[in-house]
Length: 296
Image (cartoon, rainbow, N blue to C red; front, side, top):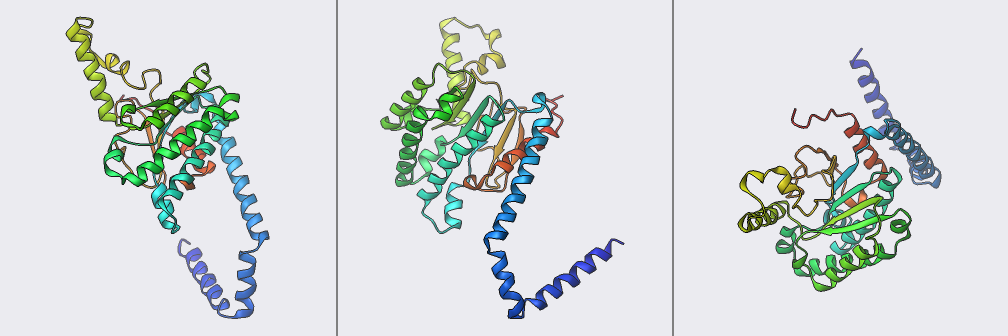
């Protein structure tokens, strides 16, 4: 029985290929495939499936919904290269995608979203012209955040973490503006990691502990995991429940190394600018199906 569907399928496929050799069949088939009717049907079908997936995710209950999602937004450059576009266009598309993802996360009432926008390694490995493009996008993006009704209507507090002293002054200035514009909000916290490295974050926390110990304000026996956690850039954040990385890479790349000790990891094959609402729902549903052990 297991071979029958496969054999039938091969015969149908062979028949279809044979028919497509004849223009009378191929021409209308090509027209139909590219018609508005076909795209409308595909779009409607995809929307129905997406909405059903959303309903399943929500019906699992609030206790099954991740409270904190962290995202490694990877693949802007490959998205552009695959479409014979300039790298700048890929980064610009990535910026627009982040706006969409923020809307989807708010729709699900997930209170914490953290994104990895620029690593300390990027600052030394990327071409200066590409970095300038990124800096310009950060400036325009943070300017928009300062005035975005989506941010203010949903009372989203914006925070930027990392070694901000490594960023140009124009970026630092607009960071202050965005943080001040949303400083009174507490319903949601949107954290952007810029000039960020997980190892560097831990080093900075250890230095602070060393200084405290040297001054006598903390004794050796009081240095425990909590002492480090409270000195991290993300001290006011719960640890991530779910970490999503796009573009098919399956590594952490120096992101929230301390905080993700017990996070669930999800790797998506799509490039960041191509990340869809359905991809987010699939990641969350996958998370909901796992049994979190916390090392137990």
